[in-house]
Image (tube, rainbow, N blue to C red; front, side, top):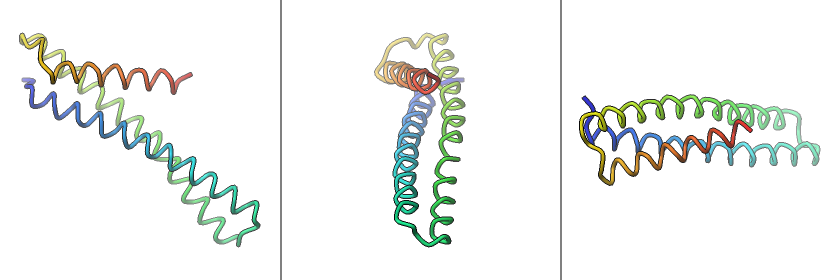
Length: 113
């Protein structure tokens, strides 16, 4: 049975994963710039290889975050539907959950384009 507490937890989970996703995307940009700078300056091949490994790891985290966010979003939607079916249709937690769902769906649409 879905409760308002479960809804708050799932909403917070979605928020946290969105933050993680943004931070990994920024990290990928930063590491890519650092790698390009090292190549341009003719850095030591070993150091360059290590930097490329760091960049590859950062790039792997973006799809992982997307998968976790999709899962968290479906959990949140399911909990929201259960709560609405049980008669809870108003409240700040429900409004917040709806806004997070809209934000995440918009994020997915913009990343698919």
